[in-house]
Length: 93
Image 1 (tube, helix red, strand yellow):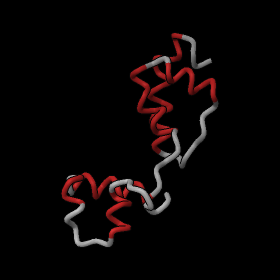
Image 2 (cartoon, one colour; image 1 turned 120 degrees about the vertical axis):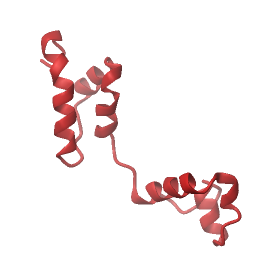
Image 3 (cartoon, rainbow, N blue to C red; image 1 turned 90 degrees about the horizontal axis):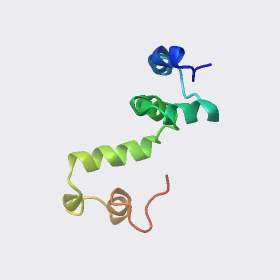
């Protein structure tokens, strides 16, 4: 039903708003294929994918605040530095 041209114009924004107000939702494969066909709906597909773990979000935030070359200079244990750099022996996600 959503793939019909008359409905697809307004269905995307409605799905987008609904995803803002619900927890993680798994969308069916047909709806995901339909989302792939509209480039302007990529944000909807991104919202519907599995959320990143808190550990991964922290890693990304730290790397955003401190450039990658400066991570080695932080006063942290080697295990944490390798974790931040996605190095061998890093803490598992």
